[in-house]
Amino acid sequence: MLTHIQILELSENAFTGTIPTELGLLTDIESFEVAGNRLHGSIPTEIGLLKSLATIDLTYNPVTGEIPSELGLVTNLDQLFVGGTDLTGAVPVELCDLFAVIGMTNPTVSIDMDYCLDPMDNIGDVFSSTLESDTCVTPCP
Image 1 (tube, rainbow, N blue to C red):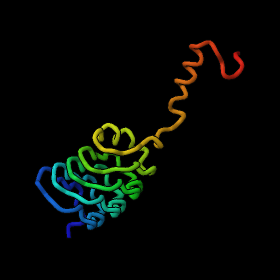
Image 2 (tube, helix red, strand yellow):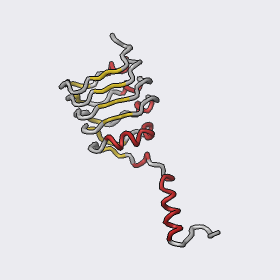
Image 3 (cartoon, helix red, strand yellow):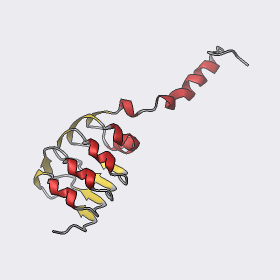
Image 4 (cartoon, rainbow, N blue to C red):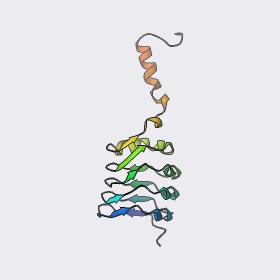
């Protein structure tokens, strides 16, 4: 078997079936792109074994289920494209660092990412509106 493949680009080939669990044997793979096929079923958890993986493109495949938390083990992952899939559920907390990538490329997928937001991200808005209304939550200086 070809275990030293670095780029697997199989997009737009009308492939059918599921994503094979043997994908986890491709330990040197950096890019797995299968957009625009007819792959179905869930994303195999074995994908978490691919430490060099940086890009996953599953767009426009009827892949179902949830994004596996094992993807959080893929420390090089910086692009996850899942638009046009049938994935559902919450994005695993292990992938919160990918929020911008998933959020920008995933407008059609029903995925809840609310808990990935840092509640402190909006603290500037709170202080700004407080100062604009001339009231202080704590004693004014």
